[in-house]
Amino acid sequence: MQRLCFMVLGFFCLISHAFSTNALSEEVFDELRRKGKIQNTFYKESFEPALTPKTPLAQKLRDNFFKRKTPAFVCESLYLVEKADFSRSSVALRSFSALKNLEYYSHSKKKMRTLYSDCYAVDGKKKPLPDPVEGNCDGKTFNVIMNDSTFGKHLYEYKFYENEAEVAFESKNMDSFFLAIVKVLGAEKMTVSLSAVDMGDDVLLYVLFGVDFFATKSIEDTLTASFLARINVLYDWFERQIK
Image 1 (tube, rainbow, N blue to C red):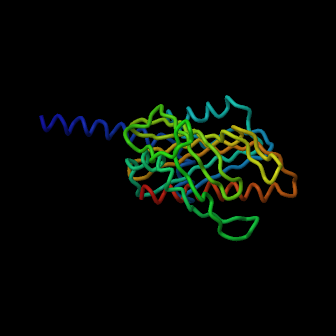
Image 2 (cartoon, rainbow, N blue to C red):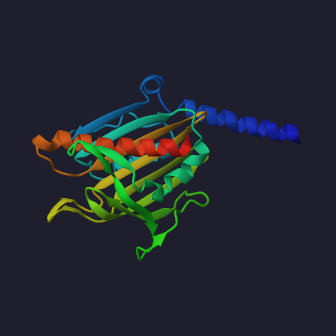
């Protein structure tokens, strides 16, 4: 009986290894191993994803992304978290309160700033809830309040997917963003699609970020740098949770 259990365990380990090693082309994986991350950005250009892992949930995120109108700004990112514990990924991605007081470098203000002064899950009446970290998260949707240092307090929706070797979510803003009295972003115009993939000893992180805003040429580079800084600091936070 014990021998049979080891055989079954070994079989699933082999499947998991094959699943992970085939997630990326050899060329992309070699580049990722050397650099630690790969990012492609597009602003008001035609966009064709080039980094999507060949995994069920990452492919699902890509397909869902293109069911909507392509945003004005898109960033496709791949990160490799080396010597990481994939089993902690699902809980890490649902630990919304851990985003509180996360800092990033503001290119406009030339200094470190708090990204979210507060962050927490809420019920239908926007009453705060504990982080929804119990059990499997596949098919579950959570509402989250995030108090952004630039855009203020807003409601976001997170939809999760999970299988044995991958955890993913799609998020979107549920209300409009204003700076003073100027509307800068409509509801559901900023989306983040993220997939964490088990790569054995490492974890692969794939992110598709889209935001539909208009910017003059003079501030395009500043906004691009700002959004990239936000994406990268979220990766840094996730890395710390699973190392």
